[in-house]
Image (tube, rainbow, N blue to C red; front, side):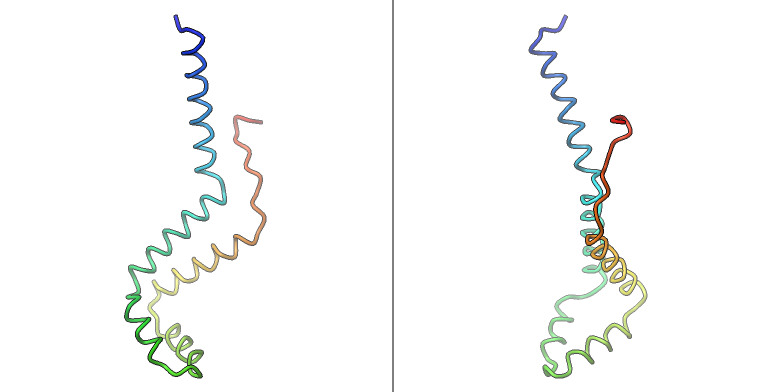
Length: 105
C-alpha cells in the first residue's frame, strides 16, 4: 500500500505532466515552434553571408530596388517560406484563443 507521501508525489507528478503538456500545446507556443521551424528552413534555403555581402555593397538610395529585385527573382520555396513567416508574424497580432483542454470541461 502507498503511503500518503508516495501518493502525494504520484499525484503531483501527474499535475506537472499535465501542466507541461498544456504549455507545449498552447497556441502561442505552437506559433513560436512554427516560426522557429520556418526560420530554420529560410536559413537553409538562403545563403545569409552572400545576401549580407550583396546588401552591404549597394548604395543607400538603391536599397528598395535591390530588395524588390531580390524578391522578384527568388525561387518559389523561398517566397513560400517568407509568406509563411509573414502569416505567422501577423497571427501574433490576433488574440490568442483561450485554450481549454477537453478533459477540463
